[in-house]
Structure formats: structure tokens, C-alpha cells
Amino acid sequence: MTSILAQKPVLAQEEVLRGLQQYDRRAKVQISQMILYPYYFFEYTLRAKSLLKLNGKVACTIDALSGQGALADVQPEFSPSPAKEGGMLPVAVAKDEAKRLAENFIIHTLSQKTKFLTVPRLHLADSSLFYRPFWLAQYRRAAHGQQQLIVDAVSGSYHPL
Image (tube, rainbow, N blue to C red; front, top):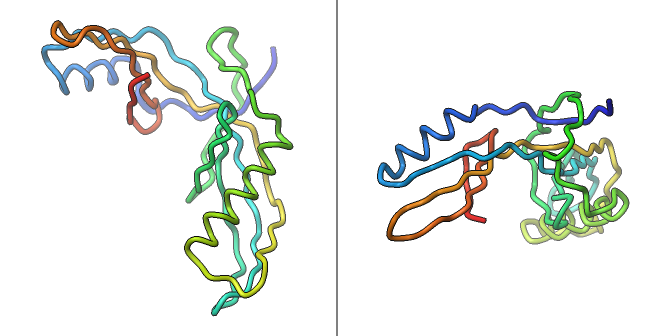
């Protein structure tokens, strides 16, 4: 069986269900399944001159479906896990494209916060494709009908689909 890098779920199905039911006691909530959502992690060493000399590390994640970037404070903890048929979303952004998106995202984000005297130089230090677990939930309320939610099994944040 193929192995992938994945974050371990922090929130079990029962905890997510209990949390959503406490949020809205009149709603009927059902957890349907866990999915594994693909992301790339890129860590770079940075060299640049601004009013201060900037040397250090900067990291970001790239959503492997949409290509959206986000700065990462720390490297996510992930471990080898067996690949599961049916629960893993397919990667839509190739690694080379994700690397290009990561570099552009980091330069753009940093240049909004810092005025550089030289063009920042990035050198790739680490990269990984990893999967983050999410719970899919059905949320029903008589007056509002049915809505699907995706619940992050690591942080507990949720979003309507």
C-alpha cells in the first residue's frame, strides 16, 4: 500500500458532532465522512536588504486544489500514513507549479509588509506534499434547509460548502 504524509486528526467524529450540536441545539447534524485535503509545504531561506538586513526562514502552504497560498508560522506536523481509497482528494496543482506559486506568494506578501532595497532571494530548504484531515457534515434546520459543512479535524474551524 502507498504511504502519504498526513496530519493526525485532533478532533474525533464524536467531538465534532457534539460541538456542532452545542452551537445550534435546534439543528440536526450528521457527520458523513473524513476526507484528506492535499497541501504543499514549502520552506525557504530568505536573504534581502531593507533598512535592516533580513536573513532567515519563511514558509508557506499551497492548497493543492486551488493554488491558494498561506504563510505558515511553523512546519505542520505530519507522519507517514497509508493512502486511503476514496477519502483522498486528488492533487490538481503539480509540484513545480506549486513551487512557483509559493515563491510568488512569499515575495508578494513580504513586499507588502517590508520595503526592500534589494530583490529578496529565496532558496528552497524543504518541501512536502501532505494531507490535512477534514470532516464532512450535513447540517439541517427546519427553517433553513440542509447545508453541508467542512470541519477541520486539526483546528476545529468550519466552513459551509
